[in-house]
Length: 157
Image 1 (tube, rainbow, N blue to C red):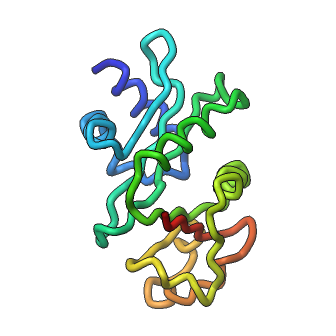
Image 2: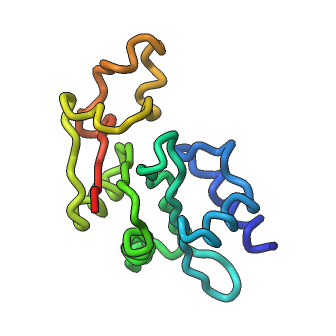
């Protein structure tokens, strides 16, 4: 249980994650149900990835992809990413502006949504740049589908 508490503590340091849903029990449950995977060294989790539920049971969100800062640059995110995709049968989506994550999705042939195809995701998908826009305007957010702002990536097996 200590390793899960340590992982939650590390994830809490990342400002891009939606923290209220991250608990040790939740992360363990995701792993148990094959919606998350991790790499471990000396009993500590050094890389973690999770596919989160969406309101549509046919879709999952790649909402967490994390590597401990000491272990970055060793290919662990690719390993975690690859395992998540192998274990998955759902359509996947991801909203990001992180250049390293964009490299991962491009490597695995995800499709980048345009402003006109954004609504393929069947729920109100928002990201940190959307926090600058009033709720009523989010469906046509000017930051959507803009490089270095808010990109939606899709993977349909």
